[in-house]
Length: 223
Image (cartoon, rainbow, N blue to C red; front, side, top):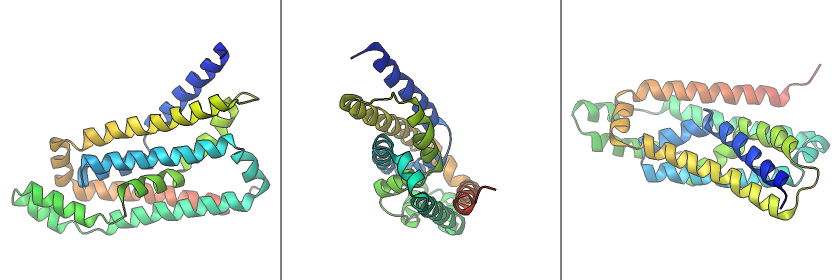
């Protein structure tokens, strides 16, 4: 194992961790799941994000970029599917009823409010939600489709392939598990319930704008 190989692993792991930490759909979905449902569900989202990273990193190492260039319609289809999923999440956030939660907060029944929230969030199993969010995340597509590939050596041995997949997936899981544990804390959850309407609207608008932008770029043709 050469020193240059270790430096490559360290560099890619560090750059990818910075990309993971930067706010985006994954952060919003993990945080909201933790405060609206539970820390455990937030960690399940984190595990789903990690599974999605396994798919993207494996695809990149197996020549994802070359496949997208050879079959542009495949890339367009993936972007459309991702955009529609983000728009679906935005729609659920913007149209979900929060009157029951607000009433419980006014009456001092925080546990009832949290229970109401958990019942109202019907976007599927947390792990699946995390996985689909990662598959649809345009930030992840850009990273693994360009930066990740550009940083790879000309020849990637099998041990490095496995190490890279583990490192980038582990970065996703540990960071978003930490996010879930923080946002699932009692005081943070209580604050969320009080500001739920505005937080959900802002989150929904952000995801909706991101979905529309991704949908537009899928059909955009260079001049």
